Amino acid sequence: MGNCQQCLIKKFNSFCSLEPDELDYLTQQKTEKIFKKGDIIIEEGNTLHGVYCVKNGICKLSKLNSNGKEQIIRFIKDGDVLGYRSVISDEPVALTVTALEDMNACYIPKKELFNLLENNPKFTFDLLKTACTDLKDANIHISSMGQKNVRQRLAETILFLKDIFDTQEDDYIDILLTREEIASIVGTATESAIRLLSELKREKIIELKGKSIKILNSPKLQQISEGL
Image (cartoon, rainbow, N blue to C red; front, side, top):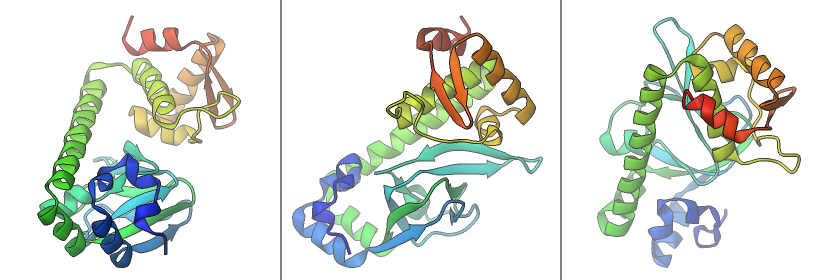
């Protein structure tokens, strides 16, 4: 079992606020989990009894709309903590979390999380800041869905993916998504997403290679996302 004091991932989340003895305590209480691509980590409507700290891998948070179609809300990657809002509020999970690739995560029981929150004010404050940031991002997403057209939302999504996941050595964004998943993020039909991606390619704003996307003209893509 990995030692939390030696874990490099903790510097990306609220657990960096924990003291050495608290990290040692966490090492003894956590359970390391392995998920395969496609595994459902958390299912909408369930009650959680602990949180997951993602060590490596990417997963999507999604919700089914009234038509039974998946809407991808956001992505989780290395260092992110899954499920803390539902655990703290003691409410059922509002989203389904699915692994987009093989993942490793550490499961921390609710009792141990609450013990740390009660005894370390800085950890509590940092987790509160994370919740505020997540809420701000959710509000931006809702505003975008309501005020921007599909082409604008697609341009914004591509820029967002590059910002979150960065690029590989060949400058392609370091995440592979199906056209259906891209459409789900944007909130449109798959056919529309395919057509608009092709348009951006013809305009030499992006390059496509299978599921990979490379941005060729960031300023133009930014202008499109802003409706300019």
